[in-house]
Image (cartoon, rainbow, N blue to C red; front, side, top):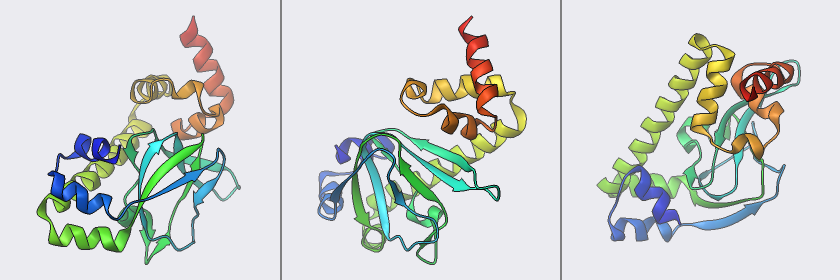
Length: 188
């Protein structure tokens, strides 16, 4: 399955894929488990094979603010964008039972240095991450709450039926009550 994930981002040769697969470790996390914790050391790259998870932060009022969602068959935010000096700057939580493939980030970096295909794959993942963050930021600044919900539904079909609505409201930058009203209005 990791082959499918990688090739959907940037197709690579069987030899390059074998190099990556030789470093993979599989891990499972249960629904609700925070598997990457802010201010803790983290040295992994993650491929989400099954399930749904989110990245989030805790604001000064102690509320969870959802930053991103990740569906199965995707790549979590790369090591270089979610850590500083090997310390995580963000939390990741399983919203359903999940299965992940992990790779030691330093070993993956070594592969990127030695293998042009893997470097191009890694750089594509980084560019995609940046593009998604910028798109969300622009949406929060320029779209109405209704437009943001419609865009969320387009980007994450069926996710609304799988995860807590509080996470969706937080991601959209609105209250849970506002989300309920929007959902009712759109259902009519």
